[in-house]
Length: 219
Image (cartoon, rainbow, N blue to C red; front, side, top):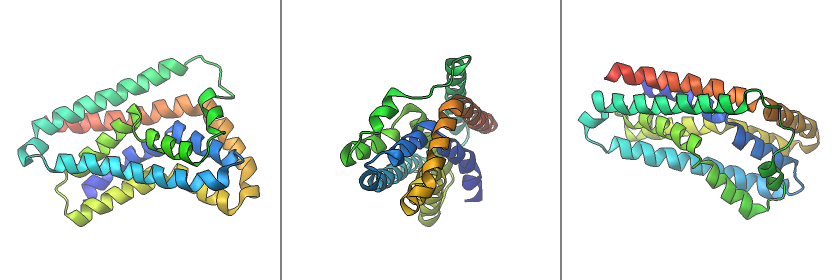
């Protein structure tokens, strides 16, 4: 179980530092409809994240043992690591030399969301290509670790809690102390809009190299 947790930590960090869910959360919390949208959005986002990782890890755990070990696992990890590294490089090239954005058309629409659009968007956030790649990495870490049902569930909960912390903490703190959080949310929004490309590149590269290296040891 400790090995699975160790593999999950960098993946959870990458998921937590993903800029789109965090920015979506901040924009919703700055909107006039935050009291009605924030909690449903948070709940669906967390449940969706748990569900995607659970399906992937259960599917991998159901494979024959010889498939989950050795060369087969190594090939999957190498491919997944290369995909994450490629995604990091694409993000770096896409944002290099570009002036930082002070707004985003998609996020401007998020500010107008009611409950159902917010819930639907929370679901979509968990099936983005980057989110699916990271969820697959988490599924590999959990599903190939020969865990008991209790350990499997504990790892899934840990992954979900850590990965969603940059969404859950702002929501809870804002609903508890709206006036105190208003200025902080604006500063966080502006910082992430400016630095999201660099953060995404570093985190994806780190996770990609880690998974790629783990795959090489299993070949």
